[in-house]
Length: 257
Image 1 (tube, rainbow, N blue to C red):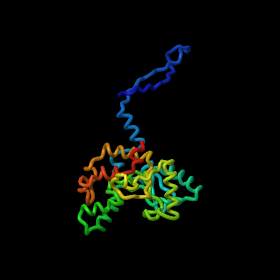
Image 2: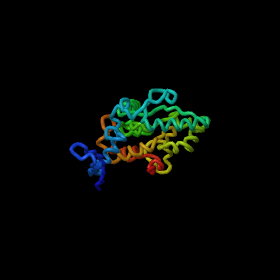
Image 3: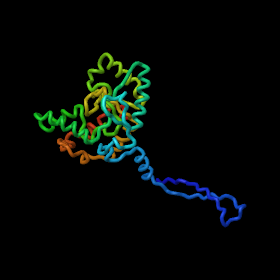
Image 4: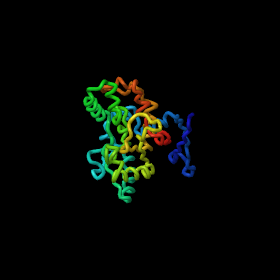
């Protein structure tokens, strides 16, 4: 369906006209299709196939910012909007005696590939399918990680047991009660309700106002053939990586929009 956009141009015709001539308003009608609007929106969100596949340099992308060392134990980048929401969440948490450190943020294709390669070598005694499934308990194949998007963060510890007692339990309880208010959701919950893919990750929180849009673009534009360039990629179809892992998120995340 075409949309009509009216652009008003105010023209003052003084030369060659009587000085008393009234001001003239010229109305020009320009047709903009829905495809054009979609393109504008995607450009604003920086969505492209390379982006959702992690094949870009976030360090030179103006929509990404470096996280302060106050909130990270190494050099970490996030989408600017995500970082601002995180800081607001931290301010609220501080008032309740809770603090957060980001252990991991944005990782592009090549960084994810290095993790995958290291673990692929570590499980060399397993056959290819068993290797992949072992890695996929907690790590993504390159081009399938939510960490590519700058929307997902790992907080305070990479061990579920840390969040089961003491300080970690208080932190997780606070997140479960308050994080959604700032846009952050735990996407890898227990698998008792039929969730597929990765194991429980109490540390992994995703900023859904952006991530849900990136996932929608991923599902509409990415196919199994786009996930390649590393050992084990031939198993993408057999393991139903897009269906079971890319979309293996919590019910809240699925129903976010």
